[in-house]
Image 1 (cartoon, rainbow, N blue to C red):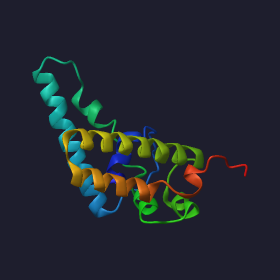
Image 2 (image 1 turned 90 degrees about the vertical axis):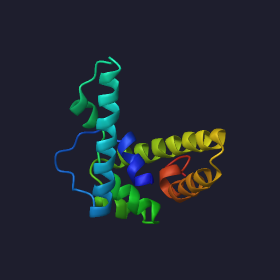
Image 3 (image 1 turned 90 degrees about the horizontal axis):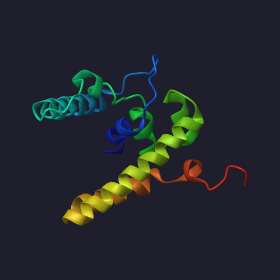
Image 4 (image 1 turned 180 degrees about the vertical axis):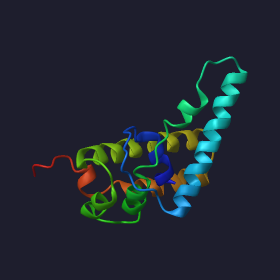
Length: 138
């Protein structure tokens, strides 16, 4: 779940990024299909939007790294598979945690306790180690 949500927070366009594994690629394809449907609905509602431009704003570049991070990999291990700089990856994971926290509030407000508990588990898996250290100068 957090690997898929990483597509919402990663904005960098990278040319040499590796494709995610097959199951993550399938999730990303589903995300693109849903984004395409949302954009087409916006067009039907007279909202000016370029469908393909909107779909291309979602990027799968750090899905694999976030998946590994949620599975408990060490930071140096995810940096071997993550494209980009360390600071950008840290910033993306922190933003991802903020998005998940907002989803927890949304799930709680609509009474989805099962989703809420899954999202809380996701937060506990990604909010750890150096990524969330208060300072790197300890």
